[in-house]
Amino acid sequence: MKYPATKIAGSLLFVGAAQFMMGMLVAEALYPGYSVSQNYISDLGATCNGSCTIVQPSSTIFNLSVIGLGVLGIVGAYFIWSGFRSVSVSSLFAVAAIGAMGVGLFPETTGIYHSVFSLITFLFAGASAIASSRLQRAPLSYFSVLLGGLTFVALALFMSRNYLGLGPGGMERMIVYPVLIWLLGFGGLLIAHPIETSKRSAV
Image 1 (cartoon, rainbow, N blue to C red):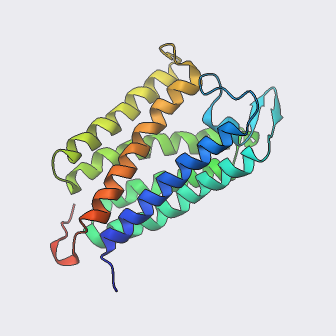
Image 2: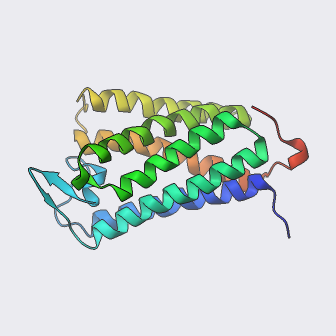
């Protein structure tokens, strides 16, 4: 059976987001003393504060899961382009996915490289959520814009160190969680209601 490109894209996005969420939760549970409020998400891969500490198996689990998110995202971006012929959405998503891969391949021990890839991921993931609204119908299109907007608001607060009582780790999660929710929703939509090639729209 030949599946529509959009159904394949949805499956990749859904699996990528789901496995990363599960991997992150498992890595947190296996990291002694880890705080979702005070620790950055990437501390799961390597915690660097003066000196660097790598806690196993949390480090391997986190790095593999975020690399997996990136790999599935890159392939998913191709199928988004194939199904919708949307250069904007597929390009934004591909850059975000490359950023996610970089987060896993270049943990905190690499210094500025990790920070750059993290920022790329945050910016382009939020932009992808907003841009994808043109490929969806209401109300999910509205939710995509809202979730992408929340990511940008949280990113601005995070970079200005206004954590609103959540701590740096908590505010960083307010950047990441909206995008993961969007990925699950958008991916689920494409799985349940794939768009045939003849019905795709160019954006």
